[in-house]
Length: 476
Image (cartoon, rainbow, N blue to C red):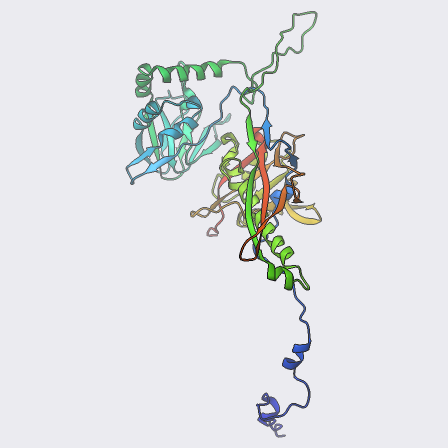
């Protein structure tokens, strides 16, 4: 049986200019047709879970004051370093005020002298910095590397109590003690570099610097006052008594310098030509579409600021005591459990999508199946019942590490709240207004688009961070 003959070329090839059409072509027909259009699309729009999950407080005065009980135990911060070479590493003197004993100290010359007394020491993996029970003879600043803090367990085993990483301090808690001794041992997990300060050298400098001696004496006196487990000024109480003993009296003291948050803002000037606004408004209003996309961009930047802004953003304002480092690098269920244990009523985890994927990989290796929960009709992953939500505004470092943020939210629970003001002039959305500015000599209309916002952490344990989260894949 022979194959059918191929049709002539004229039957499959498009007709050339000399071949007449027998009906109206599509190209000509489109001249009488109207295309169906989509609204302008924007690839950078994200779910913006942080903005959705925050309870927003209306700040009518433009400033929000967080009143707290008097805090006697000063929180820690992180010192910073100046790298001029492998062996030329110096602590930046002004950042020494992040140490609790030097918080608020303003003598720049004394800070520079203290910074100059630190010496660089390289540490190899497995090296023991000090052992529990030994006298404190040096203070340490960790330039880089990972160190494990551990103590002997009740039955002779090694009990890990924490991980120390870049910018942390060891030994400054011995200030004001008669015979300071280490309460734990510290071992280097990786090769690293630390700066060391000899205590004898420091004491000699303190003896001839009256302002520094007064600073340290005031710190020691403050630490000796009665305080509760959170470091707040204690209230005298009596329990379990019988008869008619004389009850101790007292009062709840307040912080006389509470922190105040002023509303920040994100602004842009939207420009639309009058000819475009007048003539090209069907089927879609050009000004409305321009405004919609501009507001989407403003909201994206608003969430970025709530995460990264140095004044009020989460990554820079979470208390140092509420920061923990991953034990092995990738985010494991153990790491998330430790982060959960640091606060009550954790409402949400926020992490970069790659960090969430890294956590799922660790669950897969252990044969665990994370649960799910429903938020606003969306089924989202959860750990221990706490939703694990993506936030692409949390950065990934050049070393492929990121952070996981845990939040307790709401004023009633002394959590984290968003701040905005409603009822502002020409309000377009809550906390956002659109104000017509003018039409310039080039016939362009100008609209000022502004969003006002901020964020407040009401008490330190309302937010916590799991740091140094490795998001890359590791060899099986």
